[in-house]
Image (cartoon, rainbow, N blue to C red; front, side, top):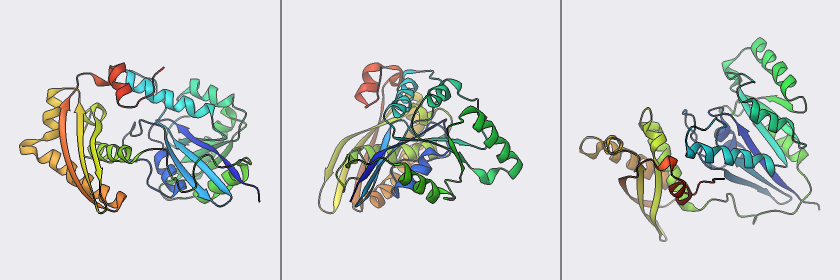
Length: 294
């Protein structure tokens, strides 16, 4: 019996629903998904396995014009997803205009691989508006197959999976069949803590934060975790901690509950806040935090 395998990479502008779709396709909570743009900072793989198939999905940061080093790294992750894809899922939604990021679209147009163009959030539109969007995208990416979807409601997600399986090339698997992501356990700890910060703090605070796991000690029934939340300013440290430490305690409590669901074990979580001035613009620190730079 032949075996199919390939890389299916999801790209698009910020906040169009890439992470929500990724989780729906993989069937695991691999990427954090919030209502805020720039939630995803890394390229994250989620691996779907059957006996005769392996689909390696990649969620990527939203495409944007970078204003600091961290955003440059995020754009590099998105560009890299164009170079090794067997199938590309280009994701947009009914809100954004097709000409939002022409330079990246030009790169997509030059690809010689199958492209599924997914128009998300169709529940926010009507038939006339959706038809106009489809026509506009047909002109821009004539080689793409256009599929209206709602990732949150899982509308047409099964059809996307059907098309991927049909388009997937014959290949042996790239990863062990019991592997469901390329990321280590520590990565998901940092992402879950960062997700809670994205949800509970306003304005610039979530975007100035990086989380580092300094200790991850796993036992049979429990995991002890020490995590450091880095910010860029002393004032941000004060906001993260909050009056009498209440804000940080809330984040840690919600993160611990989520981590217990994720790992299926009792979690002992200690969190600390440190200032690392302008880390988002430091090549050295970004590399230390695992970001991809030119």
